[in-house]
Image (tube, rainbow, N blue to C red):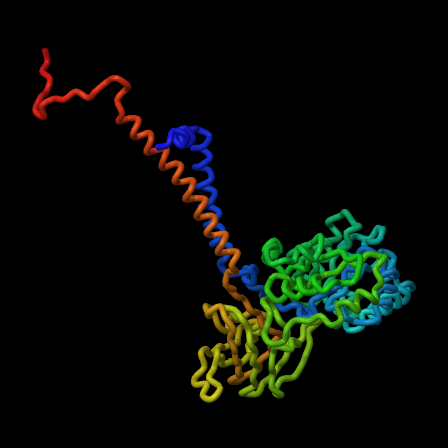
Length: 460
């Protein structure tokens, strides 16, 4: 061996570093493999059992919870359109306080009516500011939530506590009134009637929506990234938002938090033409309003809170759609009088043949559920057809989960990790070989003694 190489591989620091590099490289390779399983779109585990009360295909919501109710009203009126899928608005403490008194309730309702009118058909989430009062949190939350339910049974999708109140009791009291096991903290929106819980998570910019960073939003609930905006959206911002909704099941909407200097109309205009591609379903949940879902004329529309359902009790009512992924679920209502459906995956249009699956949707208790229609499919584009075979069927949407193939960068990363681990193991191997040679080499000036094979020493 070259003396310089010999001295290098014998260095204790080099040998310890080689061991560390090899271990870290192999661990990184294993973690990369685990991360690739299921792809970005499978980040939700388990699949949510509740539908979302807003259309994800509209992509954007607006977060106005950092400003008073009147300022939010003026902003919504100035935006001039209902481009947003969800508007998060603060209800001031004086409005909450006024709701509980018969003399002041009309003024409170008048203020809330104006807010509702300004949102047009946009889904509304309210954060409730707790007033300074001697009334216990539980009673105050009950009076407030009951008043909102009675006045706006089909307008409010979510409620939560505002971040101005440091007391957790108010959060728990609101959660109790909407029958949630989770507290209504300012970063969690609880459905007022029905639907999935969503979490708000701050993001620095639209760059946080790049594919390489989407896994940071993964969890057991839907996430709404909240992104500050000081100017209308650029083309790059819009594309990142579209890709996040299309490829990440856990992202419910992209919430924009506009700065006060940003013109509301300019922001609304910058998102007015942005939408998901209609040729196939995105990852995650799609409600029945999605243009990628095809229903025949046998279905009728109904709503529960802000959740829209298509219902039918006619046989041979059909739903069809195209998706790219390995698993597709039906978001449906299980009930004692629910019927059954037949499912075809990639059917031959000329002769579809028998269904690939027949599913009974009856249950002892009515509940929303995600029922698997097909699993373990090839990670490619598929066509699915669902046809009712009897009984009453109510559908709120579908949920797609995929396992997209790794890009070229994943392959390069794997090769680099293998090369680094191989180099480190080679260094350790050279050092070990040299140690063996050292043990079998005689000291300088000494030669090996030659003896007869049968020679042995006797005791004196």
